[in-house]
Amino acid sequence: MSNVHLVDHPLVQHKLTLMRRKEASTNSFRRLLNEISMLMAYEVTRDMAMQDIEIETPLETMHAKVIDGKKVVLVSILRAGTGILDGMLSVIPGARVGHIGLYRDPKTLTAVEYYFKMPGGMEERDAIVVDPMLATGNSAVAAVERLKELNPKSIKFVCLLTCPEGVKTMQDAHPDVPIYTAAIDRELNSHGYILPGLGDAGDRIFGTK
Ligand code: URA
Figure 1 (cartoon, rainbow, N blue to C red):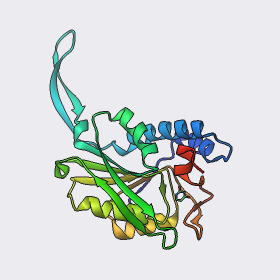
Figure 2: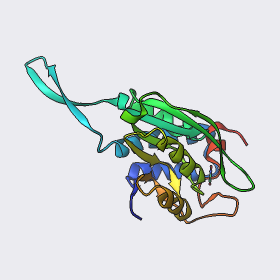
Figure 3: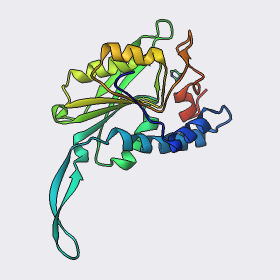
């Protein structure tokens, strides 16, 4: 699958396995997602632009590299995206944050927008869209479509889990947007859930059910 980055680091895979277990508590599910998100942030920012600045060490002056975190916008697809956002913000603290509220129509499984708020100057920013589950792909496609109206410099998509159907839908609509995921599961069921998956990510993050 082109343009899909499978983050198969042992730490990520170990934590994902713990999260999948049905007996994982809300507390540990949330903590593990937070930790995986930090590790995913490390991968997704690997090619981030750097600049040289002049600094003084205790011994001499030197040119050293820094990133400009403010140029990054983390775009969380509500509500489950919040679970990834926190971990990513702890490693890219200067990032700006946008929110897209989409709910899945339970009959048609299509995405319906109810909220959209982005920082200004989007055309200067690199966008990282986050949502734990790339399932049907409909929400991700709609979110990226909306985002493209604001013309950001680049767009990447980060999820925890996906399936062949979700990857295909996303790549057919947005072949230019790389997908970062910790796993590609077997399939989507008729209710739009990923199998074997981990259940409803939003419910498991927030303890609703
Ligand atoms: N959203 C979820 O939270 N879980 C799935 O399996 C699919 C979509």
